Image (cartoon, rainbow, N blue to C red; front, side):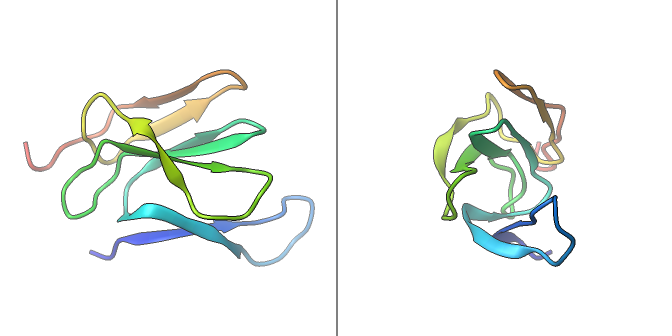
Length: 97
């Protein structure tokens, strides 16, 4: 399984290919995300084992992600959703359990 730390972005108002935004702090697969107008979060996922890591980026500036905090439990295959005030991560699995 390949794990990637790449963050790409697209400008929704225009058609075209994705462009490099920066990198996550870890190479991951099966993670979840949510965002508001200011920040985007990426949480959980597999790194060879599952992680509880939450990374964030600031939407207005290109660059690498930084550590935001941790999920209550390490898990992959996570779902994510949010509003302008709250982000939620739900479900997931731990294949090592």
